[in-house]
Length: 242
Image (cartoon, rainbow, N blue to C red; front, side):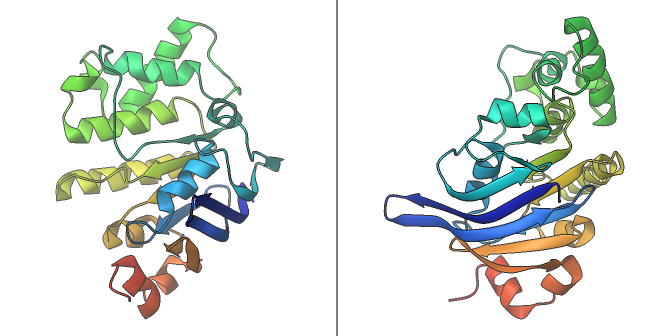
């Protein structure tokens, strides 16, 4: 098991955001994490990535306990994330932004010096379909380009597992299709993916397994085809259950 989440609970004052949630991600697997707003999805991603250090339970990555480690240390081990609200570095170009990801990512095969990191960034931008935007300022990119830039910056860190937090949100149908193709290509590189996404067609197309959360509890965990035909899980997915 590449990522192993065991009995994780998170509480903010009197609100329990996660309550004893367990699941895993195998090497090369795409796992969808779904549920209505407030289900605990982003809290889980924050816990796994180290952004939320205070939680109960155990999180292991590549057989190492990463509970309580800093996000930078977790990224060095090969677990990186994107953010739902994309906030590119103001004043930097796309190539400079991705170069930073190359410099501060996984300790495995880290580029030696800025020129090597920039060459890696160029390769990643090409992979993400952003070569033409390499010299553009990050804050001038459109929504689709910013989403791809967020993914490219994470990929430049050479992950074994990438956490994609609504990476296709706000895109039109054509851009979503292109995003699906990009996510598939990431998996073809041997990178495992934990993806949060509200669109059923995205999960039906991409996910091997789906984990459903509701009010901090795990409600379902199984093959995508089974979860997406489970009436209770679908009701929770769309937020239609009482």
